[in-house]
Length: 136
Image (cartoon, rainbow, N blue to C red):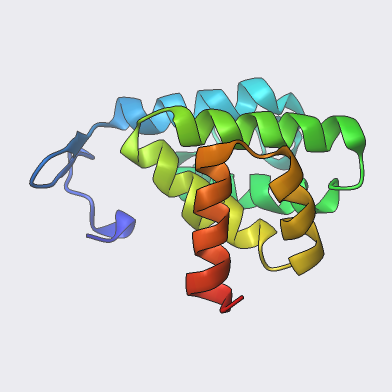
């Protein structure tokens, strides 16, 4: 089911899971708590784009790439990526892979540098993205 096809109550049901709006809210809170400067990219709490967690994580991915050469920002980025990978939450893992790691892996040099600071699980996700999406 595409995220634009959500039923009116904003829930998504699958065979083994249900993602409630609270899951998306948690994902947004995690991103904005770790990267408070991300709020500057939006027009305040009423910004319509804040309703789309995938869009917000896409903006975050762009910020991660833009600030990759900043050691402190890169450290925060790796900590965040590792936390998402270890969360055990299917939505957070999906956001990690499709929004963040796929964007980082576009640049092979960034991808190689990221491997040095990623944990085991997030590193496996990145390796899989490189292989399956980019053929490397």
